[in-house]
Length: 300
Ligand SMILES: C[S@@+](CC[C@H](N)C(=O)[O-])C[C@H]1O[C@@H](n2cnc3c(N)ncnc32)[C@H](O)[C@@H]1O
Image 1 (cartoon, rainbow, N blue to C red):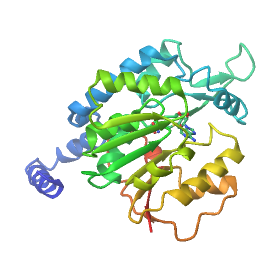
Image 2 (image 1 turned 180 degrees about the horizontal axis):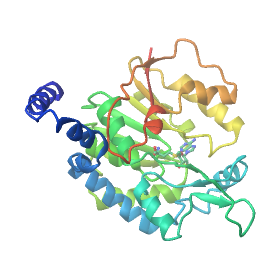
Image 3 (image 1 turned 120 degrees about the vertical axis):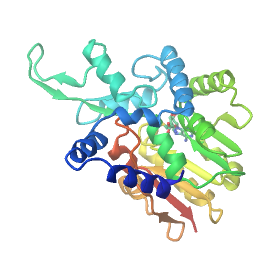
Image 4 (image 1 turned 180 degrees about the vertical axis):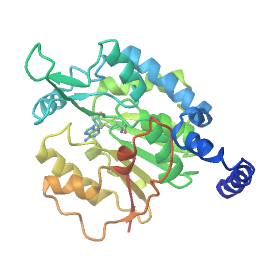
């Protein structure tokens, strides 16, 4: 049944509910999370199982000692910030960890007192609802196409693309060798190597790959991982190399936001932004603000 057929059936069903009972039922539909169970499919179960495996192999903040630049950049932020990886931890899991005292959403303003302020949370991965949104609502049918995830880290986009899309090839590029090993371990364990591959490489060395890619995904790749001068060089390389007409580019945040911060002009005539419908309900664990950060562009 498609959207319009479902809508008609629902309207017919609701028209049979007695009028005094109808507001209660509509309130339940809008506000209860009981209907969220309908959204859980086998794909989500597979992704959650990969997340369970990764959590067991990583520290709580899912960062590696080898990530010196990221540690340094996070310490430099004006407000205290912690990394909570959204692919590994849903809001519900964060709440559970906070109530057992393993994690905290606040920090103490004067040690030992109850005067606290909220911590800023950032994630270096897409959450499962964001992946579902990306592959089912942002990108078109990817049959026969190649998708490249620039900075694939834990591999969330690759696993998400495997279960939620028909892309013929999903390629991850990752600078950090330990993350490449971790992704390969998961890809073998979950038998995804027929369509997924990870390369240990800097995107700036991958001209041929960028020439042939149909879709490029860039989820806040450079900001925390490279110094501004290196970020400028990397963005210029992407604008000069990823140029095949009709290819798609997904960015978080928008290109304007990323480039303005670095004072790099967006190359005129390179891409056009395509509309994305953000009015989709993906369960209480989906953060509408995070979905709105996902932007889609087409190379002109
Ligand atoms: C924010 S994470 C993105 C994670 C993943 N794409 C996702 O959406 O779940 C960025 C990753 O990009 C990697 N990275 C940064 N600069 C890179 C470069 N020039 N080439 C390849 N990977 C890079 C970092 O090591 C980091 O793991």
